[in-house]
Length: 140
Image (cartoon, rainbow, N blue to C red; front, side, top):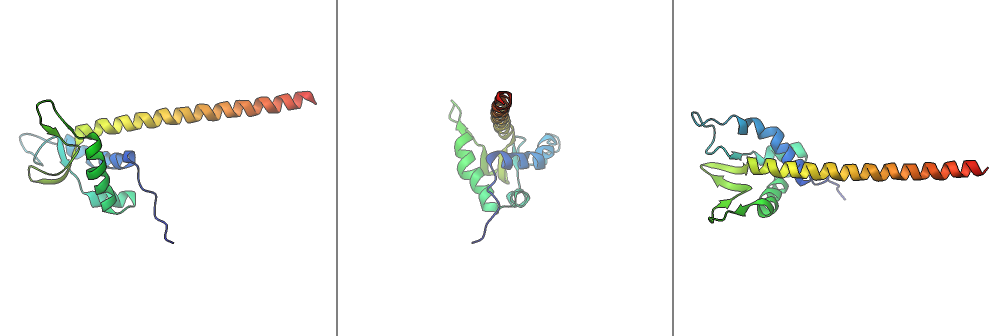
């Protein structure tokens, strides 16, 4: 049986995209555009996947089938706002960078809250164990 690296989380995928493409997003200029639109940034899925140690179809599937369905939405006027789109203005495999940054910030915030809760629980356990040990030692 072959074991493979653990599948990356949404947060890990989005952090990898943010690290790799934030400068590309920020460098957009209306005077000399380096892509079709400012908001949608084309990404190299295979490059992101290699960095995460997984097959490119895993990253593509998470972006296209999961994250697009979870975070893409329709505005009141009927316009679609995509999280990930196959093609826009001649570019392929594009991420809505501002939307992605918002989702990533939310995932990071949830992760921090989870970590704090875990550390509080660990601290409480340590205090409880110390209390038990102290009470046992004082009874001797």
